[in-house]
Structure formats: C-alpha cells, structure tokens
Length: 310
Image 1: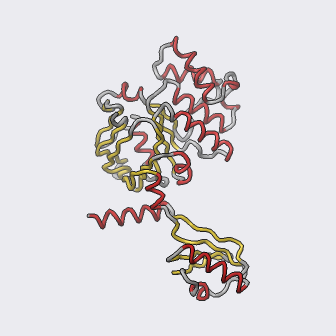
Image 2 (image 1 turned 30 degrees about the horizontal axis):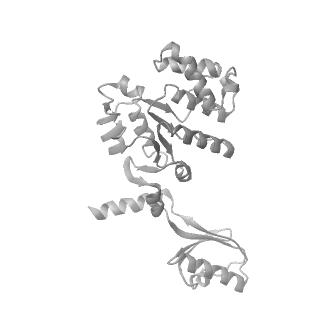
Image 3 (image 1 turned 120 degrees about the vertical axis):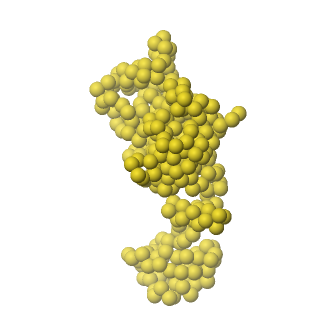
C-alpha cells in the first residue's frame, strides 16, 4: 500500500517570509506520526496546507492519491482536523454540536445519529450529550473536539498540540484516546514538546526554520537525543578546578544556586567520580542526573551534518 499523504516540494510564504521551504514527505497508512518542532518552526503552516486550509505558494499535496488543488472537496473529505483551539461552540450542547459537525462534513442525515453515538462512546462523553459545551472542562472540550474530527470516519486525523494546557491526568487520557483512534486511522500528532511526541509516535518528522531537519523512527531520533551532559547540585561546592580534575569530566559550567552542568567523555566514569568525590570531600550532593540534548542542540547538529554532506 502506498503513502496516504504525499507532499512534494511544498513551500509557503507570508508576505516576504518563507514559513516552509521545499518540504518533501510521505506518510504511510495507519500509525501515529509525530510532527516535532519549536514554536514558529512551520508545523502549523504544513498542517494547514495538508488540510487545505491555506493554498501553498509552491508544491503539491496528495491525499490518498488525490491532489488537493485539483479536487479539494474529495481530498478534504478524507481528513479530520483538531486545531490547537478546539473549534467548539459553547452555546450548543454536545449532541447538537456533533450533529452540526456531521452536516458540515456532508454526511447523509440518516447516518448521522449512529455516527454521533459511535464517537460519544469512543471519546467517553456520552453522559455529557445534553451538556452545554461551555460548561465542560478543558479536557472534555478537547474530547468533543476530537469527536468532531473523527465523526465522518476519515482516513487521516491531524491533531495540533492536542494536550496543550491540560493537566497530567487529562494528558494521559487524551494519549490513550489517540492510540485507540490510530488503530483505525493514520494519525499526525503535532507538538513542540519532545516527550509528548516520544510518548505517542512511531515516526518523527522534525521541522525547524521551515525545513525538514529529521525524518526517521523514534529509535533513530533517540540516538541523536542521547545525553550530552550531567546536571549536578553540590550544596558545599568546591572550586570548579577541583571538579574538572575528576576522571571522565571534560568541562564544568556554573549555573548558580549550587548547580553545575558537566560535560563528559564517559558518562558512567564521570558520574561515579562525582559521587565518590562528593562523599570523600563532603560536597553534599543532592541531585545528579543525565541531561538529554535540547531540540535546538539536535537541530544545530543536523544542520551541521547536512553541511558536511554537501
């Protein structure tokens, strides 16, 4: 089976500023695919282009082999979309809103009641069917937003930062729901938070400065995001020169408040040496942990690798 989404040489600019530049990706059927990047990286522009919300300046997008510019109604019928702010109407109750959403999707009137019951059960909001949406919590409003995105049983469901602003319990619930949806649909999950993408996705497309900086599996990405420093807190810290003498330590950065960032040649050797030296010299170590690279550090590394290949 071929790709369900194919993006070819996609570029878009607002006025003179290019938001995305020459993006080429293919997304297979089924599974959860992460769109990762910092705020302003170009993720929303890419998603809005795929959904047909904006017409890109250059390039083509195929949805299940349908070119969205040639047949936008057919292409868009295959997509469900939940933007960052759920597109819900507070003055409608849940059932009324979902009926309205189904009509907007062009569903046959006789099919709508059964479709509503299906998404109410799947999203666990059946007991709120008569509740005004404005009286629901943020987490349940998000569930209503997810329900409208899947009511017409699209092939593709796109979520733009769906866990933003939710508490930890709500985040866990939404993750479980997305995994359930991915059993029947291709899911694209956008976030600027690495741990969110890692928790859900099988494959990552990293967008930075409007370009695809990484296209690969979670395992491949994790090899890039390997720990590159040690964070340590020493309540009775010595001079930096004393820490630099420890075997495996390559450099020391003072962070203030008794905190240090340690660069190492060998993580285990450096951590063992730090713990031993702290005990012997009574530095009162209260925290030590490995730090993974930031998205910015990974991106800089990927850009450097690209330059070296040219």
